[in-house]
Image 1 (tube, helix red, strand yellow):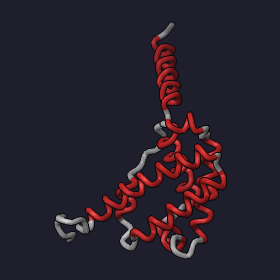
Image 2: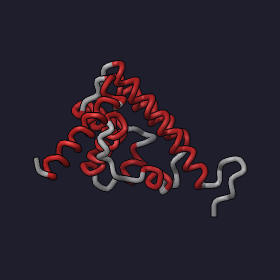
Image 3: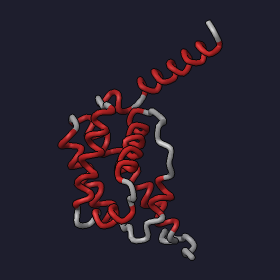
Image 4: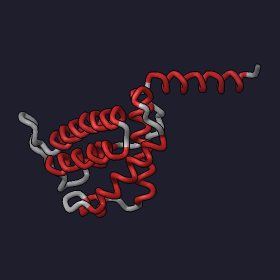
Length: 154
């Protein structure tokens, strides 16, 4: 066996180990499910009175954005490692984003997940979204100096 073949075998074994321990595996999450959830959800976001104006202003290329979000959720639920991005920086740049926007986003996301995913997968997506949403909100608040004891933003 060549070194190149050994490297391929090792990479395949790592991929299989990630798949086996990924939280989405047990919940039945698939790439197709992720694609359906992301596309259905963001179709709704674009029309939402509270979220649509912000997303439609901030997203320049929806096809690119949706592909990136599919990579994100694949990385979160299936541990594929495909997502390459900086969600915190992207969200901090949106000056008018508020906790009410996160609450609306989470409500709509959970509702969409329950409509397009089996219950275990919907629960996983909703739980991960809640954790990520809390983290983003804390990061945004910290960047704005809005946390108790945080220095004021300049």
